[in-house]
Length: 215
Image (cartoon, rainbow, N blue to C red; front, top):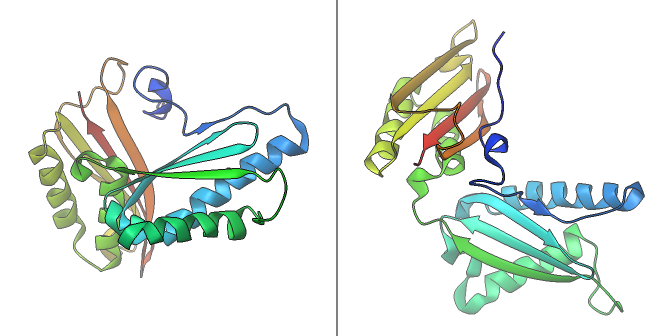
């Protein structure tokens, strides 16, 4: 039986930090804050899918909520003159957090946009791209090869793409993968980016996993 661990969780503290940074002493408050984080990530993932949302960082203080959105197309989120950013902030406050503007001591929401410098070296973006192409009924081998070539051409030391499920509409589910370069998963000295998403196809869901060795 293989002993597996999440590549990013394994490297927390050295290369990565937690996506949610706050503290609560148990009870209902902790449950509510955890559910809020989950709801924010889920809803923004759907709303900003066209903008290429890859990560949502949430940081809380006493009366303030800081949200950092990592996107590949920041212009689509910011909008003309920053109107899109203001609309998104109002959506988070009213729809997701149920905060009214006239409330005293209401939670203040600060929204920031961070552009992803090299999308082809972002595992989440590449996994989402592969999932979209599989949903359009493109051939799995071709999609995997194109993704690997883009990742390696962008300067990665190594990469691996894995699909699991009824690949290309096969009757029996299977696992297929393609790997190029070096991918040392057992050492903390290597910076590995990792993501997994589900691709809805006519034959059912296909699991997509992407590993990228950055250094």
